[in-house]
Every structure is written in structure tokens, then in C-alpha cells.
Length: 254
Image 1 (cartoon, rainbow, N blue to C red):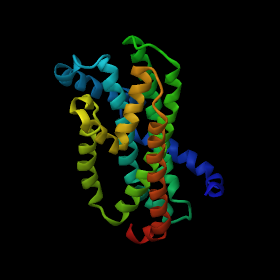
Image 2: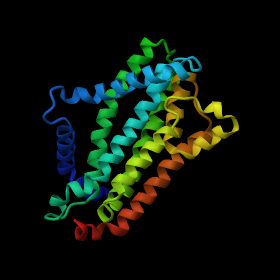
Image 3: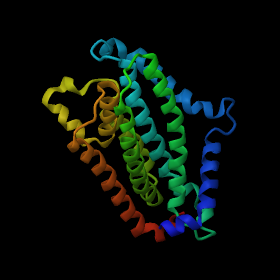
Image 4: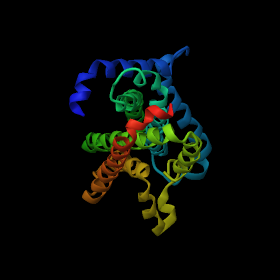
């Protein structure tokens, strides 16, 4: 796979450029929307939920931002990745190229958007008076895990979407449910012993890692690290197996 990736590195770089430019085509603000979009979402959540949860949680804006930045990255990657194969069928139906390149390029494009938003996130941390600690550097761990996890979910969704177009509607409903179950705007500790059930949700695990490192200033336990890494590896492995088994059939379902 790495050999094929190296051979098609030029195509991959062009796909990343195309995906990034295509997202903001015919917009006046262009790539500024990659920063404005999550900020506007953050503002709406801040206005709506502060009255209900803001008094319970210290640095509530950053608490919201942690959840918003992680879930937005996950949502952008998976929704874009789901249609990455079908959207590039006109290419791989004519020339023999590794089909996973289209999903990878979409993920990198989303990662660039995430990186821009992450810079704004750090600025907000300074403005809100969040103490800086070395645990901030540990955020590279959940970010890497999240990228691998997103690719895995994207491989699963893109393969299923080739065979069943209904997947896009089912995923829309499921991702909305997942958002509410990710404790973006509330503290799951209010559920008492049931809080541990939130760890079944991989997205919540990565959000919680951000909050622990940024707001609490220490590193999660070894068990928590293993859980975060485990979700990434398992979903990537499942996605890779599904892709390997069915990728030769995609051409028949265009």
C-alpha cells in the first residue's frame, strides 16, 4: 500500500488541493469559513446552553470548544469521506488508481480545516485564562487517534455508500444522535454512575481527552490512552478489511 501511495503521491497532493478549494468555491470569505463555521456554532451553543449548564462548568466556553472542535472534525471527515468514492467514480472508472487515495485526500483536507480552527482554539484558551501546561502537547495523541479513527469510519461508510445509497440518510440521523451522546454542551458527571457508559462512544473519549489535558492540566490514565488508541486501531482495521474485500466490486455499482 505504501508503495502505491508513493507512486501516486502527485495525484494525492492534487486531490487534496482540489478538495480544499472545492469546499470554498464561489464563497466570498473562502477558507475563512473553516474558522468562522465552528466559531458561529460555538456562539450559538454558548448562547443557548450557558443558562442551563454554564454555571456548573468552569471555563464553559473552552469546555464547549473542546467538544465542538473534535465533533466538527469527525463530522466533516466522515460525511465527506462517505461520498469520496462515488464522487470520484469518473476517475477510477477510467484509470487504475488506489481508491483509498480519494478518502485519504478528503481526510487531509478536513485536517487542514481542523488545524486552522485549532489555532483559534488555543487563542481562546489564552483569552479565557486557561492555565497553559505541558499537557497541551499531549493533544497530539488524541488528534492522531482521531485521524486514524476517522479514516476507518470513512472507509466503512464509503464502501457501504457504494452499495446502499440509503446510508447517507441513516448516517445523518445517527451522527445527530452521536452528537447529543458526546456531551458537547453538558457534563456527563450529572448522570452519576452512568457516566462510564459515555466511554462506549469513541468521539466522547477524544473530547474528554481534550478536556482533561486542557482544562484539568494533566494526562489521562494509561487505561484511557489504551481505550483511545484501541478505538482508532479497531475501526481502522475494520474499514481496511471491508475495503480490501469489496473494492474490486465498486466499479459495478457506479
